[in-house]
Amino acid sequence: MKNIDEIATPRRTKEIIAKHGFSFKKSLGQNFLIDQNILHKIVDAADLDEHKGALEIGPGIGALTEKLAQRAGTVTAVEIDQRLIPILTEVLEPYSNIYVHHGDVLKTDLPELFAKNFAGMDKVSVVANLPYYVTTPILMRLLEEKLPLDSIVVMIQKEVAERMAASPGTKDYGTLSIAVQYYSEPELVCIVPHTVFIPQPNVESAVIKLKVREKPPVEVKDEKFFFEVIHASFAQRRKTIANNLKSRFFTKENRDQLEPLLEAAEIEPARRGETLSIEEYARLSDVLLEAGIKG
Image 1 (tube, rainbow, N blue to C red):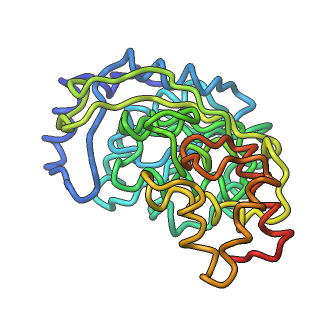
Image 2 (cartoon, helix red, strand yellow):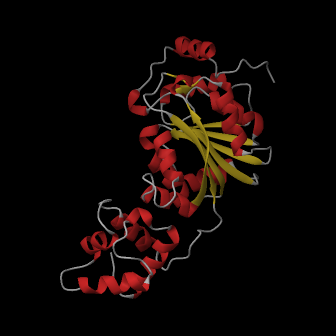
């Protein structure tokens, strides 16, 4: 392998940008990482080895990609910006285990991509510095598609990371917390200052690791309805669980059914949605479903 001049330094990043006349697109949320220490923390959290694959989303100019290639058996980097493809081809030329896919990860056939690019790998982890404007849609797609993933290690907006890892009864706990924790076990890895990016974002960032569960922590009779109950319960955070559920699932004619159903689920009607655990939501959705209450 040729001598590698690491990408994630201010000097090299500026050189690459200048050489290719690259200009940042705010609409794509492009912020390039220029700190080796943070990159090592991200890659260490993914626990990669030669038998594991890594999927990167939004590789930029390849700062994280080259670190992944040094640890993983194979790396697939999905980049939406056509202007970055020739840059990635050039800077990652020393590595034979990287495949760059031009496309939108939200429109890419991920099962097909996994079958084609990660054949022979024991496990696959997603490792990425995600564009903040599409963090949630990307992560929920990765989790809901039930891909053969070991973990997801991503740099995202600090506020969003805190919501994903939040516990019941806290101000950050909500529908995103429950959805992420239904599919995975979240762990905050580190907080990242805005000074380690070019250009610098206006918000603090965080690295979060989502260890993908083999099966959810609760069993529910109807997964879709379970999430409908959760969304309804958080429709207006200041309202009680009873009032939110009445607005969504009950009419004037059958509202008197709700309190006995909450009692059957062992939930006080005066509680608010953010105080209920994932186990309580599972119990509640099953009780409502058994009573013939539907979305």
